[in-house]
Image (tube, rainbow, N blue to C red; front, side):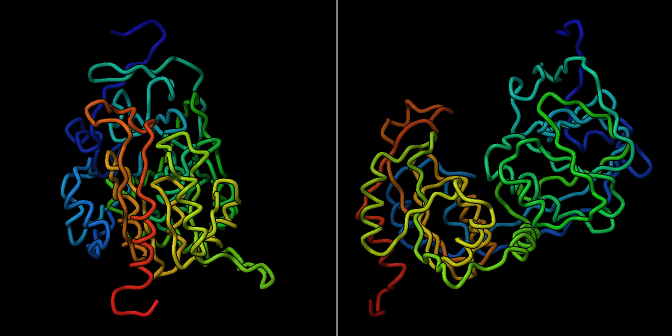
Length: 388
């Protein structure tokens, strides 16, 4: 039910706008092109296979996905929209009284200043800022998460041709998105492209909006994502020769609020004993993170946003991801495959029975066998038949 002082926007998938006469050449929403999809091979798992064959797990994107030999990438479409209403740092987009359902992904009513209705949303009526000209949208929800900030926001620029960027007045990005100011500087965009930071409560009316939809799909990254990482890292100078970087990295998550690993201290001690260095990327500049991952030969890490940096690793680098059995998410396995990295995983167990876990399972703790991790590292570094 509509309340006083609200604007009602009917929720529809973007393709449904065609039936309303809003989508098509010369209409308010124009589909300009889509990048061709690609098939990305997924090398078989080593140690990870042994766990997944024997342990129950909650697997994303679907049960049994670990056995697939490839993924088919998303084919990112590019839309040009006229007279677009853009709401919040998440980039909720409406044309007329229709809100594009895909743009509500990774949003919450409380976090992005709207009210959810059965088939619509309600925006509070507040002053709307007018942006004359053409702007590129790189907005997303969850901008305080490094993965969201990089892959769901800035990586979409890799799907925008240079002539579209040259025609734009500015770029819309979420205000306060982690790491974005530094990455935008490294991308070395056109000097004429103004950076407009959008807050969660902001509502804009944009004359013309260039909207590259997700380049990630459901962790089915398009090859243009690799181009994004290469373009960012190309502008990062190597470290001085007097400051050698560690080659064996463990990504320390002891300060993380989500999915705390109960025996992480013991794991770190065991890995340090075989030459690993424990690092906390979120305490570093983006440039230093790039240098660190670019020079690594092996990276061991619990599942978490810092693994986004494997996009900067050299081909052939070994990634061993530690996964909780209640949350086996292949987003970094797929990224590793796209970047031609070696990948394996080790599973640990949630410390609560699964029936007790709901969407808040990210807050539950888990533990992993230190011996299993050390054995997986040893096997990956020294396969059978090779001398240690």
